[in-house]
Image (tube, rainbow, N blue to C red):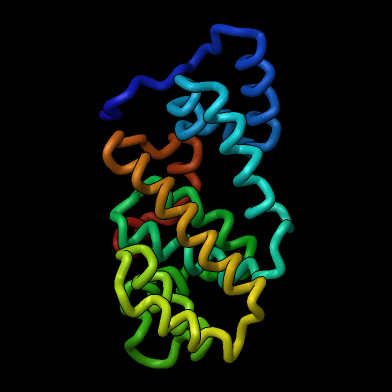
Amino acid sequence: MAVIAKIEQPDSDDLKEMYERLSQAGLGLGVLNIFKTMAHNPKLLRDWVRMATPLLTGGLMLSPRLRELAILRVGQVSGSEYEFGQHIRIARAAGVSYEDMAALKDYDDGDHFSDLERAVIAYTDDCARLEAGAADRARDLKRWLSDRELLELTFCIGHWSMVARVLVPLEVELDEALLAELPDEWRQWL
């Protein structure tokens, strides 16, 4: 059970308008639980959505597949069921298969992922855990990624690490409409 109650019914015109926009952008899922939780501070919610939107809607040069592999990995490393579950649908649209998601946990075993993808996942691990070796992994990634792409990857890892640090301790529950869409085995991938 969530630590903070969700705001199901907005209590101001500003929040009502925000819920309408978020519902339209929710791809049939309505206003997501993360938004209903963050609605306790409407300004924080609005500013966060404004900052996060370009990360998911074409504002990056970074490959959407690499972005989603990193976000899913942050969800695994942080133990965020919400973050991982929410990004399954987004990752699929970015070209990440269910087989990829199942292989992510043991990404370094075998040859499922390319050298670049393994390097991105290892870098994600180091960044999400604030490991000292992250800078060396970043230097290694420059074999494949431009400075801009490396910055964007690092920003995405940091952003979704921050989101996980809100979701996990507040026990924000995955949205029921999304749960109905997910494959039965998805929790085994965490």
